[in-house]
Image (cartoon, rainbow, N blue to C red; front, side, top):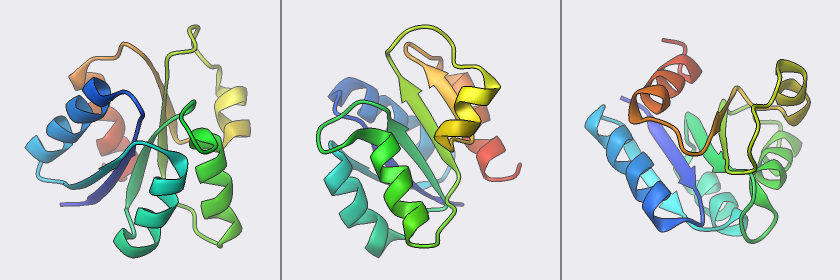
Length: 119
């Protein structure tokens, strides 16, 4: 199916995302920091990224900025535990395809990934 890059410093959440994506047939690489995400991005070339907004090394926003500065436009699902839903304007300003607030269901994750991939 698709290549998915998952970056979240919370092990349980990262593993849940990885397992859910693999169950849908996706190839997944998972990392714990923004710097690792950027290293993996270059060689893995994901078709969608799932990024925690707050993690070591700059967070998801930093990863998206760096990817865009390279001329890439990889669909990105942002996951956040900051509380409160992000409105469309905030999501667009961030550059995310979709935002999931923690805790989120596996079903909502699967729907978000399918949508980000154009399905």
